[in-house]
Image (cartoon, rainbow, N blue to C red):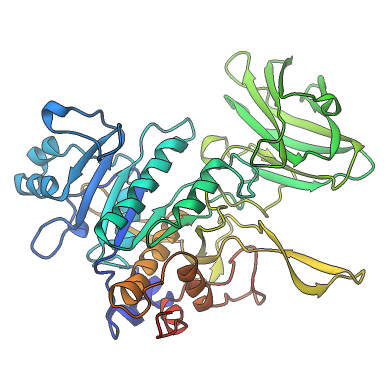
Amino acid sequence: MNDLEKAQSCITQVTQQEPYLTGEKVIIAVLDSGIDYFLPEFRSADGKTRILAIWDQTQQPDVEQGRIPPPGYREGVLYTREMINEALALGRGSGQRLVPVFDVSGHGTAVAGVAAGTGMGVAPGADLLIIKLGSPQADSFPRTTQLMRGINYAVNLGVELGSPVAVNLSFGNTYGDHQGNSLLERFVDNASEIGRSAIVVGSGNEGASRGHTAGVLRDASHVVELSVADRETGLSIQLWKFYQDVFNLAVISPGGERMTLELSNIGEAQAVRRTLEQTELLCYLGRPLPYSVQQEIFIDMIPVGSYLNGGVWRIELSPVSLVTGEYRFYLPGYAVRNAATGFFLPTPEMTITIPSTARRAVTVGAYDVPRRSYADFSGRGFVYSYSDGRTDTAGGQQIIADVKPDLTAPGVGITVPMPNGGYEQVSGTSFATPFVTGAAALLMEWGIVRGNDRFLYGERLKASLIRGAQPLAGIPGRPDSRIGWGTLCVQRALGGIGQSGS
């Protein structure tokens, strides 16, 4: 299954012939919605589990029942390989009472199957570490602290066991300045330097969702138009700008009622509450935080009755004192708002989700293998600036941006295992990401486990993936904001690695 996708990613070329890589003695950590550990995809030939452990953060510890969290943690329950094998021996009914881990959405099971499934996975010889993330917020994104604990546990377990670790994060959200400054993004950067690890993150599916718009404010006022669908129960709007740029902001309802925020008068962070028609606006006027020079204006739209006022809302920006004039708006992710809600003139650039914006993450976009085309839903965007030495039309040095995503992988029509058996075809960067996570495990096996390159992790591993990336038809120039440095090719990545191990 996914044979075409694996062949196009140059995976079968290194798994079904020399050097016959499987990901052996590498840990693939999947932080997601759980797993159906009874499926054959997660068992070895003798029927035993290939899962090292499952940490279910949604469960409450019970010491008397022997259900305790990992050492050093307070939440959730850790189920060891021995406990999982005991559950398998009992059969599904009785076994799930012993190890009551479920995957209601099937997302985690699907991701783990692509990365390391026994019959279909990229790295079928890898050990799996499953972390079921708990307490999702309204948009189903786990709490930052729980995600951070999951990452911390995974990379430190690798250190404890002396094994390289490839961490898979197939989710993200839109909240933040998208420039790598948030607590979570910086944590991912720091965690990637623990042990011999690589943290692989999907770029999200916001590329065509109309949830982002950006521009540069000049001397005159500018109006940003937002369509709010009927029966929308709530919506939030983020505006990110440089603190040194000063402009006022007005929100105008579909019926013409107006609220003006004089941002030029902000001294301390403050909140303003107003009601326009049948919609209450709670506006947070922020100031830069100690780790970011960006200023956030957050507008929470709350219905007075059941729904927000549908129609065209307008946000008017009026310059006061400008240096750059840049502004960026973000809405919540597509999955938590009506499909008809979005900006009239969206900007597809900078639609990668957080934490895939972390500098040291391996950020993965999606492409369509049969069509050899970029997947328009895939999050895209340049993030960090650098100069390439060229000059612009005015004769000055041209500044382009560093690349996110780093590369793309198959993400359309991917066959995945489902809880309780069977397979489905799915699309999204969630399923492109485990192709690269599995590829990372193969490279780590070749380099670290087999001793060909004991430093093949972190940024060095990312550099190898980038070097091996192939161009995509219709996108001749690289790097590109849609595909980064190109499409995944493990064989080329392996061929670009020196043999000295230094």
